[in-house]
Image (tube, rainbow, N blue to C red; front, side, top):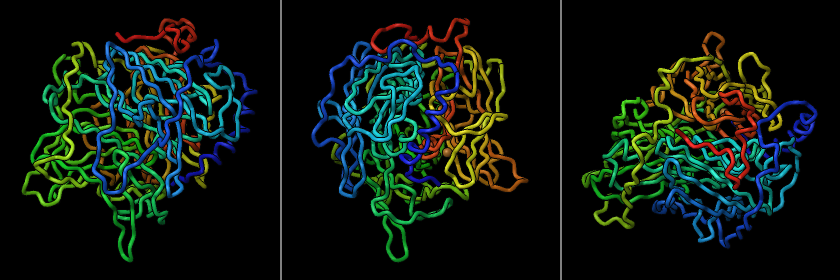
Length: 586
Ligand SMILES: [Cu+2]
């Protein structure tokens, strides 16, 4: 379980941060001036963060495409309050687009200018230098993480440990996508420790797509492209949540589909849900690109037509095309599954056939997750009701061809053959009353995250490591590491829990580790992963639980990747807008 007590946690951790500033330790962040606040402020957009009504038809999010190697975006980060008193957050572009899908190509430059137009925050906490942006964080600070991208963790790039943009401040991100970035679906979201959960639930998130996936799967070119972003939010009706393995019961959070809420209700005997709607041409093959960008909701998706789960032909997981990294230069081979487990922050892309005219009932479902004795209720519930109509209301755009080079998209090629230079065991655990959550390297003392702490792992660029990530608590956790992907070797000691289909042998950035039974004779469930530090990434970045309530309560840690050449890490650091030290891929 976890509560929406992030602000409390922020306040409680303040003294920890200040005390820790007395401890000597290094950092690879910029020692020079923090990323410049040089761009003009982006004005707030009136009527920002709009939401659809319950039961509405799903509309594809607005999209922006790079041209000539560049995509430049301006964001007003702002908030509003809905009629149920929930605070909504969003990134609004000056033309009124909310959380647009950002399309780039491998090798492109993405520039994001963001102004924090939320109210002045409370509970300021100083951060140790080197800083990036503001020198203190508070309850309305923001920054941006470009989840899954293999970009650099530098100030003005994909750095989240020290990057702080406070109310009234403007910050410029300049991200250089490696030329070997796999084409697929990624996403962006704020990543200020202690307040990630409320702003992600509030909706300040969007999809980021590296185009060119048709190079690995020519069959998807020209297919109708269905971009679905699944978020969660505080329940409409504040019902009492069901237990950790709840079947059909009241969820921890309601889910939304492209900002159409799927609300939970109860009557005398039942829990029921009002799904979003989608009209589809009968029998049409569609390319679905689905991101679970919720804060805490684990999903298990299936397309069910008249009680029969349909075949989903997996094209990509976490932005990496299926079977695309084997180095043969051939095209990927899809994997057929009939459901797919999608923990928060994960993405899945698949081709599926829409229901034929004879189908009575067609639904995108999520199935109950057994999250363990202390876990959240993630019930079986419908997300989208598909209506077969010859005349679809809004015709889906087809996947456009965006050619990428023969070498693009092979960032992780050869990983499973590479020599392993280190083996590490990590584990998730919690304190007894679940107020502190830990992400620990075995042998070290469990502690909650604070942004001024030294790294718990130091490794060297160019290496491959084998990590086992265990769950020693009685609820599920979701492992994510920034900047790189890992090769999934195995899912171990899951007991009666089914293994997630389709992921062993693939390259993920986010993976679920189910709850431990709590019985001393049972081994801890774990996943075994090959960690790929062979790329351009050096510096400090984080690994953590992507159930954001857990991350906000401490379940995060820092890794430092030293440059292979032995030159000092600072050499790789750059300041936004100066174009120094940005690394291109191979
Ligand atoms: Cu967790």
